[in-house]
Length: 382
Image (cartoon, rainbow, N blue to C red; front, side):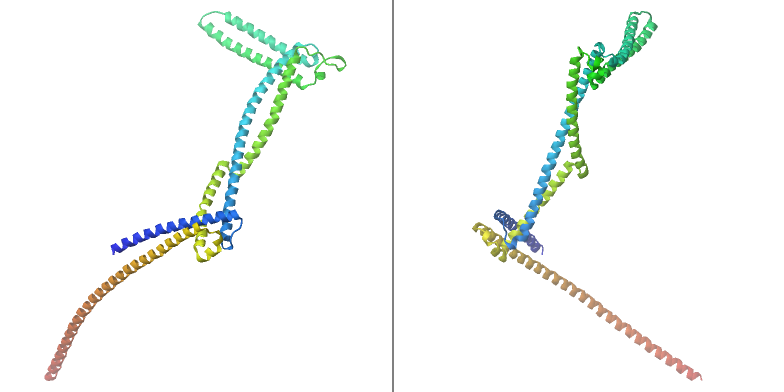
């Protein structure tokens, strides 16, 4: 029994190997046939369904590939946009600082130049006030530097120095803001609006001319940069909005790649179906015009594999049938032994029954005799 089961396992392993070989042969034939059909642009009616399914899968792969390329291009564009925006924001920050410095220089020049009284007087008043404070605080700082004394005096001096320097720094910063504000306001106004010349004629610019030119050039570059940033951020927002609705590009690309891999996994099945069709008797006639001598040789090998599989299947069925016969015989023998046991039990039971029946008969006979004795005794007494 065990030997036959071992033989069956060996035969089943051989069948699997033959089936794998046959499948590979037919898959190769099917793949070659599909390539020929695609090259010719038409397909036999018998293979129309398989070819249509194949073309549908190919189109889905192509569409997914195009989507991946588009997503990768958009991702690269998004990164380029981020890099461009960061670079231009850095440049804008630098230009904004340059423009502020140019406005400070322009404001200083305007406050020095004559002919801008109506425009410059308010700023000059602020300048004079702050300059007076700065001079006062600088003088106070010098006095504190020259002061001497003990430890307590030294501590008080340091505290006062810190306050004086803080106020000095604050007022110097305020003075720079005045200059910058004056420069920005002058830059925003027309020369006629800012100047005090007669009959609307602008006053000569003198020293502020170069500062105004520098501020104007910087402002033009800053405005142009702001327009570029607006366009770049708008484009970036559009791409980001699409990604936000449809999911991250990396996740979508990964999903598409998995789908492509899954689709490619369906091709061997299609190849096998078409190869099996070519191996069938009716399929050979339908696909005959596409089959070469080499294909015929491969199909012959596949047929031999199928024949070997059939023969092996028959051997396996015979072995299994023999095993089943032996198993059934064993069951019969077991049943016969059980019947014999039961028959022995029945025979013993019958003997016991006969013995019990005899005991009953003896008891009944005794009862009859005793009843007769009692009856006879009663009659004698009367």
